[in-house]
Length: 309
Image 1: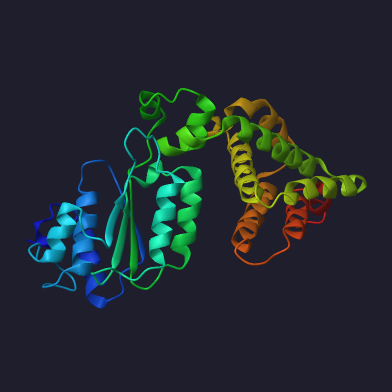
Image 2 (image 1 turned 135 degrees about the vertical axis):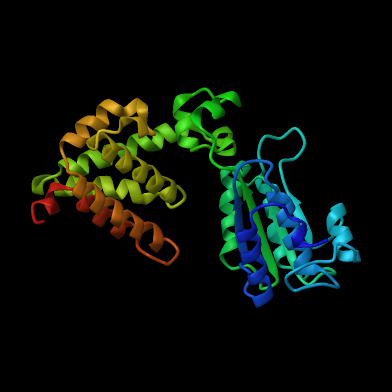
């Protein structure tokens, strides 16, 4: 038995085997798709190919001690991380255990393989911690994240998520919905929306006020990335309003304010702001001056610069 026993998705299986054969297998993969199509089974097959004692490098025997241990869940270098009993999320403590193992050499296999299933159910802290591990994993370490296609709003409601704002901010993920602190989100969103409104309406005589608002946005290092994500969503919502597709709004409770905001700006200027926001997000990995970036960001969406464009 080997990869030939897997039913369906022949193109995907062929690509995986080619990467294994060429020794260029990615250190992190996402297996995404509907439930019950064999994503976890395929992840285990990859783990066996990476550690099989007989066949390889692009297949596995399913008979050696390594393959048998993986089948039984007893291989020390292959771990499946899932939701623990009676829990509703994959917690940060579980991911910290994984990060600790990254520092260790494989116990008996050639490679360490971590299967996160379902990755959709990582809570926010766990997801952020995992990202750090994915940035520069050791050479002999591989992550496979298993996710389902985002749930529809109707499917989310069937899981007991009824708050419309929570539904839309979770973007089809049960894990995000259950870990979302909606009260905190609303507090942060209020500040960010105020900044966006003031930025769009700013003129030369309000320049100092605009920079003061920018300083408030960039002051808190711990919340900076969350605030940038909120800003990106608000900008997208404003574009949806201008383009006449309000059904796509995430912040449906702010539709009146977003409509007024949309009347005061153009899609071109919103897109310019969104493009610079992407630059801000990519710059966070390096030692940059967040305050300077936010100053330029708010000016990008203001009439101060728009009058020059």
